[in-house]
Amino acid sequence: MEWFAAPDYWLARQVFQRLVALLYTVGFVAAANQFRALIGERGMLPVPRFTAAVPFRRSPSLFHWHYSDRAFAATAWAGAALSAALAAGAGDLVPLWAAMPWWALLWALYLSVVNVGQTWYAFGWESLLLESGVLAAFLGNGDVAPPVTVLWLLRWLLFRVEFGAGLIKWRGDACWRDLTCLYYHHETQPMPGPLSWFFHHLPKPLHRVEVAANHTVQLLVPFALFLPQPGASIAAALMTVTQLWLVLSGNFAWLNWLTIALALSAVDADAVGRVLPLPDAPHYPAAPVWYEVLVLAFTAGVLVLSYRPARNLLSPHQAMNRSYDRLHLVNSYGAFGSVTRIRHEIVLEGTDAELPGPDTRWHAYGFRGKPGELRRMPRQIAPYHLRLDWLMWFAAISPSYARPWFAPLVARLLVNDPDTLRLLRHNPFPDTPPTFVRARLYRYRYSSWRRLRSTGEWWRREPLRDFLPPVTLSDVRHLAPRTGP
Image 1: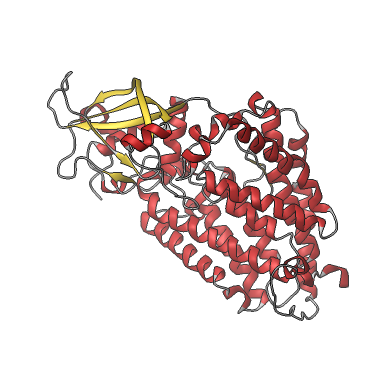
Image 2 (image 1 turned 45 degrees about the vertical axis):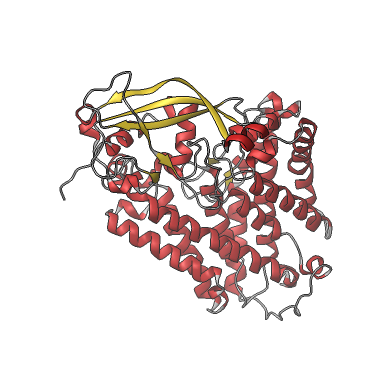
């Protein structure tokens, strides 16, 4: 079937697959580094407790059959090694019949992590990585030309990501419609980056231009993805520029880089060749019949599963970041339907005093990514994902976000749990645990240019109230990790 092949997209396939594989690597490494304190056997939300309460059919995962911290670590590091090999190009060095199961294995391993990850993995970019990985599998490898139908499915995914994000904003917070949301967002976003302070201090007219440009790229440009070339490539380029702007202005894990990978899959080699020198296009033999049948069956399945995500786009009650199947094959996406105007931060503190009083000295725990110390410049974290730091931002918005895990976190600080402390940047009690831990809620604001120059402070803050009053180990001993085998 000559119509089935799209050899002009050989470069797009290579770039897309290698970027997706690299982001799988990041996801697996983050899982391996953080799981013990979050969902491990002695974690805040243990996987064994979850699998005992939730059946396999509701949350398919290899860990329903067997879970141990050693098995999870082996899964995560194996996934990281397999995805890193694909990112290096190993998928083109094996036959097609081996490359596709390789991608499928990555998807199955990461799905197993996400489906037991509970609130720590309740982010839209988890589903986006899984959905992109499935599409990468059906794109084939160097043995065959990229299939047209899968390229169209990639554009359909990119359309849902961008148009869904645009609609949720337009339908949501009024500040998106009056172009004022970026008066606040650079300051109140979950995890500011090193340039976020500077973005916040841009003149307000430029903030309005930012919002207007965002609406244009997310609400109008996505339709151009379905135009003949070079229209689709131009649309993809505009989306890529917008995503790079977001990379510079904040930390959103791998969401922006994965969206860039999807956008680049819509750029044909002719468009790139006008800007950069390229080698001659490969010559591909005819695709095997079994591959064509498999791809067409998969395409039909995705179209059927797309009904509910498409209906969600048209609904006035549009939902953000929802999976409609337990395998995360076709999902809905969106972000920041509402923007917080005030930044609240929870600061965890401990003391070794026997009984705290007005003169007690409290020492703050330092986090790797979220704001804390006033003189500490925000760090570039993305595409790596600091899950505890992100959940602390949600907790500061509403205590209900933190109810399942915040008290267990405090219990672990009261015993100097090493797995938990590895998630933090600074432990003020390296030798013996504190006698009391408390959590204080502050309002954080960016400092002014003058204050930054004179004091070196990126932030200023004012105390609001206790988020959690001082507690001792006896108060939360039942939540502390077991010390025995």
